[in-house]
Amino acid sequence: MTRRKRSDSLASLLKKGDYISTHMYGGDEFSVILGIVEGSAKGMARVKGYEIVPKGLVKFRIDMTKLIGGSEHFDGLDILTDDVDYRQFHGIVPIDKKVKIIDKESYDLTRDWLDEGLPKLFSEYHFTEDDEKSIERFLLAADEKLKTVKSESMKEFLTNMRDGMRKDLSELKAKNKEQGAKAEQ
Image (cartoon, rainbow, N blue to C red; front, side):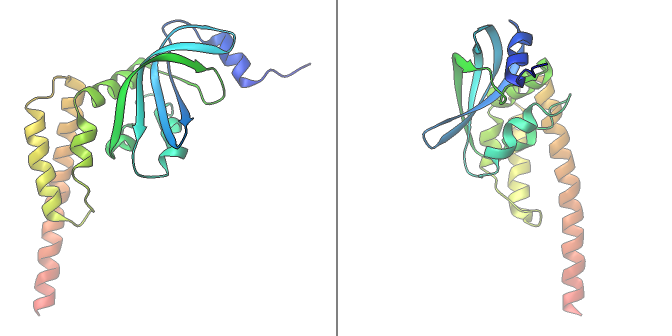
């Protein structure tokens, strides 16, 4: 019995309307393709969607596609919080071991994340857990952004993130106040 390669079996399973993610290297640029299959034949698929180019961290090269396809409710969203470029994509991709079939919700969340401009919002506020002023600036920007976000799923996501960060900020301020009082003694 001959064993079929994963890419051969995926090619036979892939059909028009499937949502996929894959990644590609072009020169020194790494990009993630996320889109809807318009058709496939001979180990290739025509895809319409987005090409996402992460900027900055090298770990994107390892983790990005794994996270995008990794869960039923898109646990890869947080990986897009660093600076990214993105553009519409309409082209041919090889059906190989890098291709993952994803669910519609994952695709919709990513599309909304990009269309609402949230990567830019997060890339402008690089902060650490103990940086009160940066967190406060981000919270103000998030409040402003919430006024223009159209997608209900992104409103919910951003509201939950903002509320969680407000709680974290309150705890950080209390901790810093306590440490300041101890230092004065």
